[in-house]
Image (cartoon, rainbow, N blue to C red; front, side):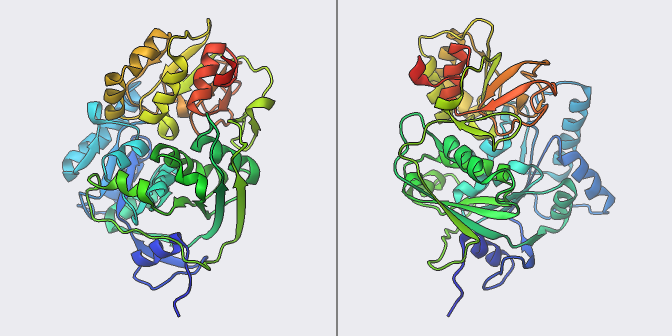
Length: 421
C-alpha cells in the first residue's frame, strides 16, 4: 500500500520522479518557475554568466520583475534594473515586467496565471512562499541558487516535515487572513516552523477569499517555514481557471499523512491582531494595544496590496479624513489592481481622505522608497516585517496590521480598529 503523504511531499515527489519523498530526504526537483527581482536577480545574472551558460533552461519559465526599487529611486537602482532589462532582452524572456507592466512580484505572478496549483516555484525573494495559497510548493532561495536553476531548471531541496494548522469557526467582522497568520506566528514564534511546511486547513479558510489566503501563505516565512500551503478548493479553482498559462495539477494531503505536530484554532472570537516591533511574533489583540500614536500608515505590499485589501481600507476611509500629522500611503500591488481601484472610485476615496497613492512598487516595505521613516517615527503597515530599521531609520518603529485597522489608525492618529471610529 502506498505511504500516506502530505500535499508538500506529493508535489515534491512528482517533481523528482519518485513515488514518495521522506521528510529530511535530499532531492533534486524539476522547477516550474524561477523568479528574480531587481535586488536579487543581478547577482544571479552575474553567476549565470560566470558559469559559461549561454541560454536559460526555458525562456518561458524564468521570470524577472523590477519591483523593489522601481520606479528607479537613484542611480544604483537604475543600474540594477538595467541589468534585468538587458538580460531579459538578450535571453528573449517571455515574462519580464518593468515600467507600466510592473507590479509587486508576489501579487503579479498569481494574477497573470504564471504560477498555478501543483507547481514547484523558487524565487530569489523570501516571500515566494505566497504561491502556496494556490496549492503549489513555493519557496525563497538565494541568488546563487536562482542562477543554478536558470541554467539547469532543477534545484536541490531537503524535503520538509509538515505542521498542520486547522482553523475552525467563522472569522468575525474586520478579521482577515492577515489576522489568522499574525495570530499563528504570535503562537508559535518566528522560528516555530523552521524549515518546515506550514499546511493551512479548516472550515474558517473556506470563507477566505484568494486575497486572504495569499496573505497567509505570504507570511509563512515569518515563522521560519520553508513553505506555506493550502489544498486547492472551489475558490482556488475559480481563481485559476481561465487565468493559468499552463495545465495544473490539484493535490491534497492523504488521510493518515504524518505531521510534526498539529495546531487547532477557533477563530470565532478572534480580534484583529497587531504585531508590535521588532518582530512579527510580538502579537497582541487589538483590545490590548493601548495608546500608540502614529506618524505614517502604509497600505500595500505583497501581503495586502490586492483589490480586496484596498476595498477594505476604502470602506473605512470613505467620507473621513486622515488625522493631522499622519501620512497615509496607499500602494496598489499591480497595474490591474490600480486600474480596478480607479474604476471603483477607491483611489478618489484615498485622495479625498488626504492619502498619497503610489504606483505599484514594494516601496517602503523593505526601506526602499516612497515612505521611509525618520528616527523616532512610528508606522502602522499592512506589510509583512517589522524588524529594526525595516522601513527606514533603526530608531523608527513598525506595527503590522490588516488594511481596515491600518486605515482606521490613519484617521484616528493612533492604532485602533474601525469600530473606534
